[in-house]
Structure formats: C-alpha cells, structure tokens
Amino acid sequence: MKTPEEFLEENGWTSAAKIDRSRLIAHFIAEMDAGLAGRESSLAMINSHLAAPGRENYAGKKAVVLDAGGTNLRGAVVSWDGAIEARRNQSMPGVAREVSAEEFYKVFAGEVERLKPLANTGKIGWCFSYPAKVTENLDAQLIAWTKNIKAPEIVGQHVGAELLKRLGGGAIAVVNDTVATLLAAKATAGEKEYSSFIGFILGTGSNTAYVDQDLGVIINAEAGAFDKLPQSKFDEILDARSGNPGRQRLEKMIAGAYLGPIGHEILKAAAKAGYFSRRGGSVITGLGNISTKELDDFCDGVADLNLPADDLRLARRFVLPVFERAATLAAVELAAFVIKSGEGVQADEPVAICIDGSTYYKTRSVDFAATIKHELDDMLVRRRNVHYEIVAKVEDAPLIGAAVAAIMGN
Image (cartoon, rainbow, N blue to C red):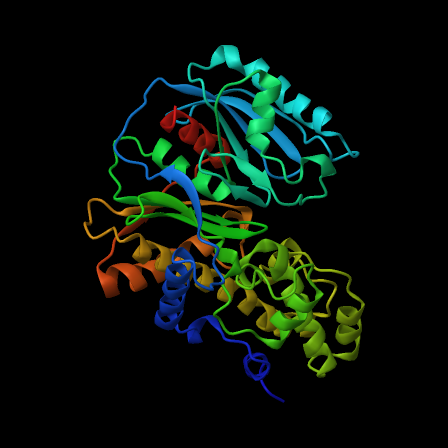
C-alpha cells in the first residue's frame, strides 16, 4: 500500500516542499497587473481611494470609530497612536431579526452621538467588512450581506452617506478590514521608518491589501480569489460543496473556514482506500463536520477524534500537510505583494507587514509565524535582497486602522 504522502500526491496534492514558489509569485504578480489594468483577472484589485501612508504625524488627534464586519458592532474613540477609549460592543442590528433601514442606522447613529464629545477629529472612521463597492469619497455601496445579517433595505445603499443623513451631516471614511489592518501598522509604527505597508488577514477568511507605488494608493486585492494554483481532488470536492463554487480558490486552501473540512475529506478518502483498521475506518466514516480547530487539536496531539491508537499516527500523516501547505501558500502570497509594492530595497526601511486573524496566530500544529518568516527570508531577503518586517500583533487592528483613515483624510 502507498504511503500517506504518495496517496495524497496521487490525488493531486502538492506538498509544501514541492510548491514552486517562484512560479506562483510570478502568477500572482501577473494577476495583480492584469487586475490593475482592467483586464481579466482573478484578483479584483480594488482601489481604496486612500493615499499611501507617508511620514505624517497627527499626534493628539482622536476620531470616532465604528467596526462592523461580523455579528458584532464595536464603537470607540481611537487616537492616532492607537490608544482606544470608551469602547463598547453590541450586537449588529439585523442579527436577531430583520430590521428596517431606519432601525439599522439608528443603532450606528446612537453610537456616534455617544462618542462624539470625546473626539477632536470631525470625520468618522468606519471599518465595514461586508461585500461592497468602494467609492472615491470613501463610502461603500453594500453589494450583499454575509454573516446572516437581515437588513435587506440596506443592500445597494451607500452606507456612509445614509448614516450621515441620520446625523445631520458630517464626513466619514469607510474602509474594509484588510485596508484597516494595513493602516494599523502605520498607527503603531512609532519612530520606526517603513518604506511601505501591507495588511494581511488570515483568519476564517483571507485577504491582502498593499500600497501601489505607481498609483500612490492602497489597493484591496481581494487576494483570496487567486486561482492560478494546483488543486487536489480534495480541494475540488470542498469547492463544489461550498456556497461559491469556483471562487475564492486560494482562500479555500489557507483560511480557517476550510482547513478542517479539507482534512476531513482526506481522512474519509483514506478510510475508503483501506488505510485504517475496521474500527478506525468506522469512526472516520461516522464523523460529523470537523472544524479547523478540531483538526488542529488532532494534529497537535491534543485530541484523538476517538481513533484507535494504531490509527492515530497514520491519520496525522494524512492531515498535517493541510496546515503545512496553507502556511507555505500564505508566505508565497505575502512575498508576491512585498515584491509588487516595489519597496523594501533598503534594510533600514523594510516593508511593514501587519497580520490579523486567528489562523495565523492560534494554529498550533504548524507554527504559521515561524514558517512564514522562514519562507519570506528565503524568497525575499536571500534571493532578492528585498527587506520586510512582520510587525508585532496589533490588537483591534480594524478599529485603529479606521481611525487612521479618518484622521489622515480630515
């Protein structure tokens, strides 16, 4: 019988060791260029209409900030240096029941009114991380709700303008979470000088934003949609069963919403092929959905999925490559964006990479931080003499980045 590694390869799996880094980087950059030029591309390359962060310093400035991107709404007053005060969390309107537009905006307007006395910057920062079209005046036109938000009247509206109507006027900067993560690196840089900035999300989903030096603006690449990469049989099964087949190919190979299900498909296929004992095969066949956390616990030795001892070691050989491949692909993605930024040529002014997301920070079976750093050191520093720095984790990056957007554009 073939080894687990041979079985995976037979089913189209490309292990982390066999990923052609240089080829994928070239594909990534080609897709970026095509998207920027308006040609067919898997990458949307959305212009945020936010200027690249420079050497400006707005010390002492504080803005009202809203953060909406899941099922919770957060409000706070945030300073240029990242200090947060008067933070409050509440449920997003439309989670428990369907709400009208008036009910929806009333909650946001109330939060702004609560916070306004504490701010000294007129423009509101709003991190709005639902599918939306970005406008030149830093507004967002909602395309569709995710996370089961039930507020159908809002779809198609420019949410910033609608909120300002309820407030009697004013100004607002609406950004998505990836752009906000990029800007958070600027807010927390202190005296450190960086040549450019990248925001990277690797949590339940994944995306990247970077500064395009030719355009002088931040670009939200919607990088999870990149599709120029090899797919295994297991990736194809997962994709076909997803709510958006054929889309978000890279995201489905590296993000937390998908790693557990991919591992589950591998285990079921291995059981069907007769790799496990009768009891072990029965256990695997009878498993319900496996979350990424459960698969990570299993690979890390914290959980055994009730498998017999003789099957445990073999099963882990089948599924640990899911995390190894994800970490390597994430590093390739980041390398492409650092190169595309056209900066980092001076060792004392690297490209700052700000990362947010639970998959990057909480995965235990594979150390994503160490793997990505090792890969970037090789792909960027050693091979290309391009320098980068993964900055320390920025807590509340969406809040902080939205504040930077508001203060910079005030």
